[in-house]
Length: 123
Image (tube, rainbow, N blue to C red; front, side, top):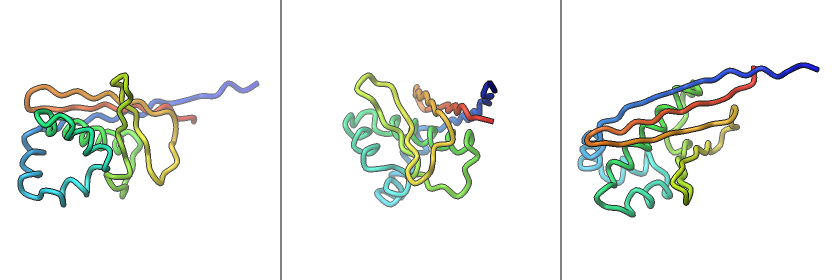
């Protein structure tokens, strides 16, 4: 019996919260609708004092996903961060087959938000 082998692909990203706030101020809905899904926007805006932090963390997760999976030409809205009632987050790839098991961790503090994405892929 052949034992399956796997490799781990990892992506990480760091985003300045104030740059997301600037983009929102400059481009408004055009920026928001280009990057985030309706569900992500609804969650982020459910706590107005944390909207920019939540969006920055999701932007970082999208960038980290692109790095981990080596995705080129994939739109930001094709990568969605979904939050479970427990507070844990999952990634959903819309219009793309998942290349393996995905895991994401988000954090934000002060003017910075970060995300790390790991993907377990069969070789």
